[in-house]
Image: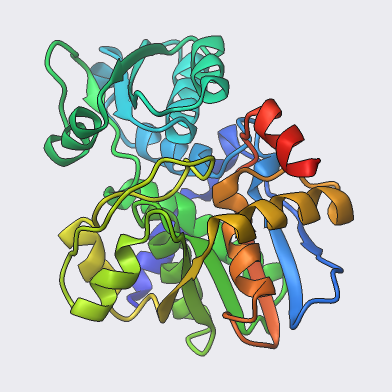
Length: 312
């Protein structure tokens, strides 16, 4: 990995920590097949790592442009990250969300002052691809396919290595790829022998098929409580970025993710959304191997009724 990319991640820290916190790394004691650690991004002010990328991207936009406002396409967490930073900066924020987005996340966006525009899933995905939506003015902040966003996310990698220098494997949820590629850029530059594995849920696992085929593949997508990750396909640009960064992809069954949500709550008093529990599910099954493994708990924004159902 280039020294310039690592320098950029280090330089992003002041902007990132202006709005976010340095999250703890804690041990998971669960009779696991490996020495598992949890990187608790669910403890961020918005309950998700997304605040890091949003903070770094928005800090690099010209103030005159920024004054027009910002908008993003998000299932909820990036929306909250952009809305949080926009409120602090005193600028308007709009969010295009899929009609499958949970009410918990929509309510959180509105609570932060964001204007929610709910659209069919295909229209939402098209907004990602075209980086625009009819009738909305302002600066578009892409949830994952943006160097500034990935650089902000890369600060997580620096923190993991500071706390656990001899980590063997890091398992990271794969949604669009901005989290995994950002963390991997930092880690591979400083500890190239560390394996970086992406975690997907079986109801929407396009990266696994795309890595196998060597090109973006379209898979069946089934909406579920694991709403922070999973889609029909992978951006070609993001698949290219995995080369030299991502060592493989793991897939957890929906039931395994639900069991991981329950275990995290019972053993560590950690509230994780489906996406955040997915790396834990993959690791507990043995798919990530042995050694010192860090699971990135990417967020904790789960619907309270769904959490109660999983716990019961």
